[in-house]
Length: 84
Image (cartoon, rainbow, N blue to C red; front, top):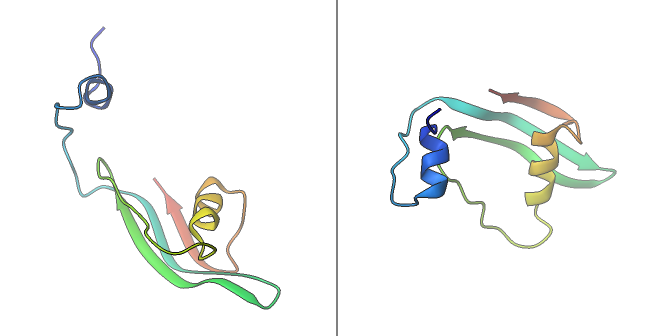
């Protein structure tokens, strides 16, 4: 049984994984607040298959909150999240 392209890339970092325009995670105008503290205000972005994305922002801005929303541990107050 052969390895998938993704498994091969993990074993050999020089192997290129084909990139596609397939959207695997989509945030559309996602908002979330805890009491009066707004964490995300109408945030929108797409994460594409086979691509690496980095979120560079300061401490306490919402990076972990975005991960919790993707994992379904939190539900947004507004907007939509599509996964695959």
